[in-house]
Image: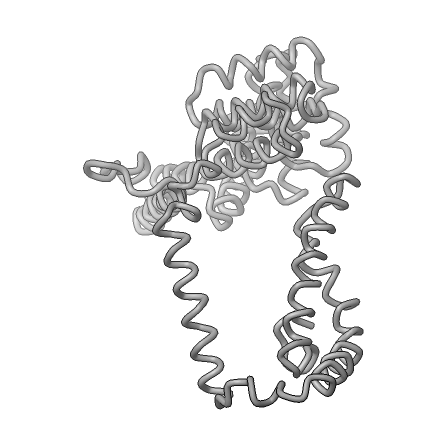
Length: 340
């Protein structure tokens, strides 16, 4: 059921005004309530619809009763056809959005689109500002901002302005590290050195593939935890089995190097392929190199192409969020010419 569905919304204009006002008030009220309860707030737009749908007949009866008490109601109404009403409504909304975009109320020019705006509001103690700051950083991190990942990791690690979550902090530090931010790598290693494997182990055991992958990577490299190839291979396998496809690539590396498991190039190809099909560009590149060693140049070139395309898609997705950069586009590293 939708709030705008004609079958479940009032038919009289006055009832529609009341219905819309109740929906708007319900959304704001539910947003505050859900946030206070600590559950996802995006349900605020959905939970109030079914109860409102139950009020439709009552609202129409109320509107009819009010109209009956106003003798000149129909004389004051503009006699428009449904098509004209629809055109008028669309014109009003178009004009409203044009004004909001033109004045910077919407879009990237609005101050609220910047994490710094919410950081300052959080420091000033504004209600809900710290949570919004964390959400803004999370969106930036998902779209490839290493600085946003690192800042969110610090925020979650401190636990002063939002609830402390060491596992999520570690993930954000790891994402910043993946994006070549040295501070992110240092933050991850410092966190692990203070808490040990426990920062990721419980989440991994509950099926969190990303936590398994990070812990496996640390164990494989011997950074922050003792080097243990067998443990790394087992964790990569668990990560892969949970659907975290980079874990499949990590397990393939173990098979290719014969570390933590017997050397098995056939199994390495299987797991590299699994990760490649999921869009993990490094795994496409690695399996292409294996195919080239086997003199299967046609398949190797196909996987090199897939590595390039996956890398381009990731880059374009991030650039779409942050807007186009000045100057020529950077060539993804997997699109560099590969000589036979």
